[in-house]
Each structure stands twice: as structure tokens, then as C-alpha cells.
Image (cartoon, rainbow, N blue to C red; front, side, top):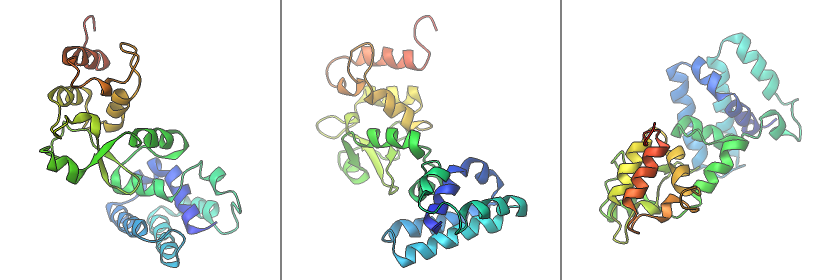
Length: 223
């Protein structure tokens, strides 16, 4: 198994592993993964960095747990079939988990992430040029696999300014704490309209959008 394949195994086990690693190991791993992102995939420098990242994790774990992972990620394992043992996770997933705190990884959530990132979006610079305040917690911000921030375009009017109703609904749905769940609500077909709520800002349906947001948050009439 290559070091990159081993990083996929670590990604598939990350939730329990993260609780066992000391802060210093987290910092070292994050720094190495950030450098891996900058390297050409498959290059010798990237492979060396991946080996160091795996070693940083294994060296910080209790010996019994590290031994089990060494057996899983050693060179005699998984020849030709890394995806099966890693559960469909890869090194990029580990980068997102460790560096960005992005939970949308793996074979189940990864496709959802790609669908939501496929919607029109603005970069951080584009959002700022339109007068938005990228630090505003009410703005919905998604992180792509390279760690770049993307601002779904439906949040902005033709002049690039955030729609007030979108900011209000974002806050109601907890966009700062759950950006992906909030984005999925906006970009998925809604039973009330038969189309995504993201198509409605600027169409005179602010009151209906607010009511739908209240309903989604469990705060509608009768809740």
C-alpha cells in the first residue's frame, strides 16, 4: 500500500483517531497535509510528505492502536484494492477533515459535497467586491477540496449584495454551524414550490421563504 492509500485509511478512521491524537500531532499532520495539497499528485515529494504524515499519526498513537493500523497500511496489504479497505476514502478526504474541518467526505457525503459545490458560486474576492462582508456569519460559505471558500451565488442580488431574506434564513438554519445542511436546503427541490428555494430570492416571495425557513427549523406554526 502506498502512503497516499494509507492516508485514505486514516481518513476512513478519522473520527476515533482524532480523539486519540495529542494537539501537537494534529498540528504536525495539518502542516504536512497542507504541503501535500500544494504538490503534484504522485510526485516524489508528495509521496515523501504522505509517508511523514502517516508516521506522524502512527507515532502519536498508543502502541496497540498504532500496531493495528500498521498492519492495515503496510506494504503487504491491499495491493490493487485500496478503495475497499479505506471504505472509499482518499488522501484528499483526510486533507478536508484535518485542515478544513469539512465533514463532507467519503463515498456517501463526497457526492453530496460535489453536487452542492457544482452550483454557481463566488470566490471570496468576488463576494467582497460586491460589498459582502465575507466574515459575516450569516453568509453561507462552502469549502472546496482545495480549501478554497465558495459563496453560493443565489445569496447575492445582481449588484453582488446579499439578499436580506437569505441572510435571515441562513441565520435561522444555522449556516455558520451547518453550512452543508443549509446549502442542501436551499439547493434541493422544496415540496412547497416544486423547485429549490435558491430560485426565489428577488421574486417577491420573501415572506414565503421566511415561513419555509421557520418550518425547516421546526419553528413554524404548530411546532
